[in-house]
Amino acid sequence: MEEDDDDDEVDLFGSDDDEEEDEAAAKVREQRLKEYAEKKSKKPGPIAKSSVLLDCKPWDDETDMAEMEKEIRKIEMDGLNWGAAKLVPLAFGIKKLSILCVVEDEKVSIDDLIEKIQENEDFVQSVDIAAFNKI
Image (cartoon, rainbow, N blue to C red):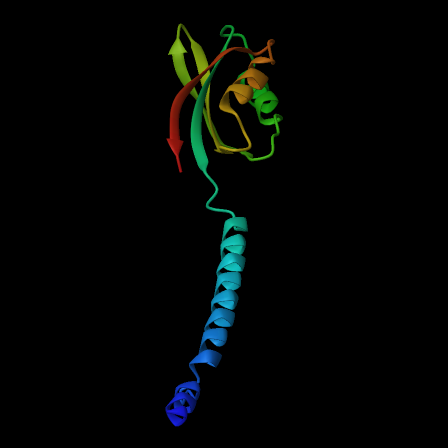
């Protein structure tokens, strides 16, 4: 019977070593998964942008619209790009300036942008959002 006990101790497949290797492999796998998750979380996603068409209305028909457009385009913010502009008839010979801009949503607040435009009190009476589209 002693011989049978000796046979029980001998493991021909080396399962004791496999358990240690499995634990080590599991630890390595967990570490790599953790590193991958950290790396993936640091990557920025797509930048959310919006295309905004603003209607800038002057005080009267004597307002210099070219100068008004220059003053508006002087406004610079990180994430703000000015686009095309055109004059659109409003009423009684008064024209409004329709100007397009593209903004990065996280960096530029449309409300702040409108306030900055309205600070040009010599030219701008009011600013309305004519169109707002997510890109």
